[in-house]
Image (cartoon, rainbow, N blue to C red; front, side, top):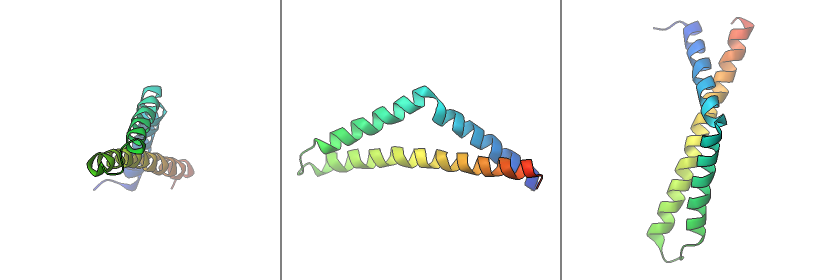
Length: 88
């Protein structure tokens, strides 16, 4: 079993890595392009084209979930950093 300090250090490293990913201009551009493309395809699809609409909506939401997961790792890393800085 890892010590609490090692766990916190690992969470801090993971948070820093997730932050680097989410701050990378190529990733920012890629997430935005994908979300825009899927949203536009959904918005411009015929109401009767259920398969296309569901696919676009699911892909759009999957991208948002990925962003949310990375954001969660960033927040956990920041919390771990504060705990390590306080010497807990």
